[in-house]
Image (cartoon, rainbow, N blue to C red; front, side, top):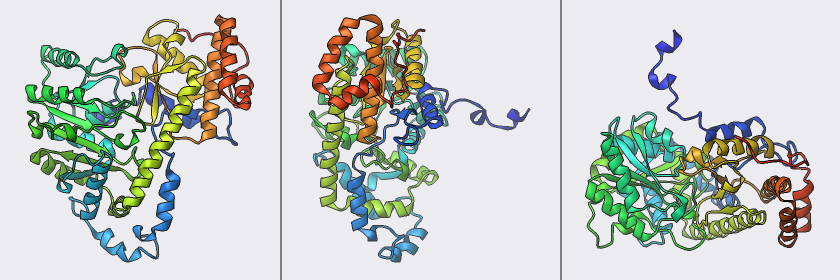
Length: 476
């Protein structure tokens, strides 16, 4: 009876919390790992946060007290910031964000501050964009695997559908013209109106960047179909090795036939700067009508002027920006190398990455059968027994079972070492149950690649919740 008093949104499950992606978070929240207080707890590797360069940011904050209106040096701006209500946002904020966006793209393209529209994080930016471009029942085509939060961000309140563009490991999950055409034709056969294509570049969860040829194919495709292209570029400054990141903004400035009214960029500072709590989301559209509508809708999720003021000051400091971007890329590259190498020592392969805050880990060899049921069984063992929250590929709508996203930039070095210990211990015990001689061979390789202390941890770690007995493959 009570449920009838509420809306369908309130009583439905459109938020998507029933996904294993969010179930892993809950497992961590119920038993969080702590180096001294809970050494056998769940290690959170399902959260794509960038915490590797906070010391650089904190140093700047301490050296620039005027940037905050809550300090003696900055309090004179308190009244002006507290009373500012303009939907456009502070001029200095929009100028600084436009400049930072250009810098993270190698200054190969410029951005117009008047096209900067604020929103409450990338979540709000995506929803507002969907409201502007599509009606309930319409659809966006999305390459799989894709970020699970898109099911919430673009679908829940808008009524928009997300339809898969099938990509697989045969070409490292690259988007192709055939895959685009197949997805579009499937929607047409199902009488679904397609309003656009949504891509994430750099990719979440793959940690890869799109090449120029693929981006050109996408631009040509949306122009041929007269549909929109939404480019989520929130990981633009997380690129740590070649090839360089290429923004869609660069492609449309080339000598190609493109209706720029169809091109829209979603950006934020949550990943590049590690500021998810500041809720700084950006919509950058080349369509005047979208800019106008999005700005009106932004009243439902504005960025506070206090935050705008701080960010404007920080991003206007060219010396700081250069240092941060350089140091951040260096630290991400180091962390990626450590984690990828550690996994490879026990025979775990990953998709080669050059960006992002995570690895796309291949555990297909550990599945009892090549099914999503077997993937979920393996995931439950990893979360509940190995005590690591990783995200299964099925939660990203991956077309193949056995892939997992592992985040590595949201923890300190010791937590990474312990996580590798647990994963390695788990794999070695599986090998012991099946091929003892193969295990001995890999142990020899491990002695050459890890420190002696690390190797001992792998075999008999006090931080590993796995029993020191053979652990066979997960069953369905």
